[in-house]
Picture 1 (tube, rainbow, N blue to C red):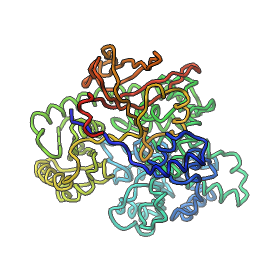
Picture 2 (cartoon, helix red, strand yellow; picture 1 turned 90 degrees about the horizontal axis):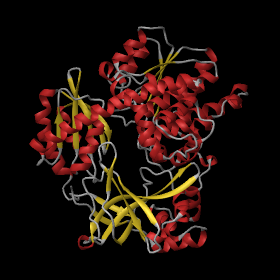
Picture 3 (cartoon, rainbow, N blue to C red; picture 1 turned 120 degrees about the vertical axis):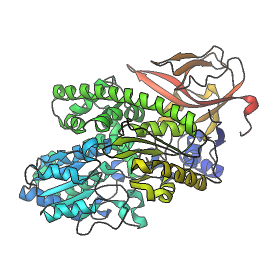
Length: 582
């Protein structure tokens, strides 16, 4: 286990006091707002109580008008359309959303998702070959991919096919000429900063919003048959699954999208997905349910088989049909979990035996499934506090994913190692790469040197930032109701962590779960009120009993058949004598 350093998130006390004077909320909530950079009453109100009317004018996104012109040509001339999307949740939901909108206007597009093993990623030459081998298409729309597919776009255009790209990935070169691309990352203007946090399904929503506005102005009566706000469930799934920053419009999307996911009139595909995930019909679905119950099932097929199945489920208007898809997804997810467990065990043994002293970790095995190595990479990066790349095998290349933390930027690191890579891209803390197996050893050495160079001066151990100190007596339903206003939690709006000081655990924590990897124990306050505390994956780090401890915790209020119960989640612990950084 790596030692973790605790530190309180700094904030301006005068800002918190001013917010407290102007808002009818607790001082604790004002502290949390100040810690998140919110300084005025207006900012606080927009953050705490967002409205759909706060959504920005979609026409401000570059190239939206060109994209609408393409969609209007498709609708007006009843053109044949092929939609290509990525095989992750962002791609799945993007395809579902645009398909449903086009269907409302009489266009039934065909959708295509690459088979990871045979066609690679996104707008590849292999999937284009499959598309062109069928019926003739007038328009190809690439969702959550395509920005870096210049040769493939050119090939389609030479065959008389118009191409529209809606994507949020960063461009590696100049935008493709004579192709309409809706992607806020291809322009350096600061006015696009707030759109750069959107994932692809968020951009598809903005495009559809603009399209409906244009068609309403043209007096197309079909507009009034479609309620776009009900598609915020799809936007929420894609946004949370892609770990997009939950600020600006993403917060509005997810705040309302979670309500739709929890509502009585969920789409059949969502209802079936919830049932297969054992989510009660009356449950209030939160971001935790989305992240750990719904999205893994949607992602499973794209990781190890074919993502057409979850799209078919999401598009289905029949619950029984959707339930058939959902059960199949559940079985695929169980298969994915078994594969992941086996690879994780092998990777950790390889790491401990051969590379434990490396600054950065690069692991490869010919038999590892490239579709699940990203999950393994994330686990190794967390457990060993080092940038980590895990590679499986796909066709004639080693392919895989990298994860990082503690401020070590993988984009900077891979820039130094790109001479050995066939393809690579992603974000500062999550990347995908492909490499020829013969180059892996040279890449490993260069990667280690680059990690050492770019992590120089950065903390070697994980830092945990907490918001405020609490007592057990302060944790009640009133506090929970206020903290729930901050939801949904995610990137740039993390769940607040609190410090409990001088806590004594009276009884030995119990292990539970299929692999006995979680722990639970009870904390008792001065009024003999007991609060259940869970340590997820904490069996390797069980706190001692009858010893004064400091705990870092998050708070949860669970509702089961309309009965609320409080629960704490242990983030970390240490004995009082080790509190050197508080």
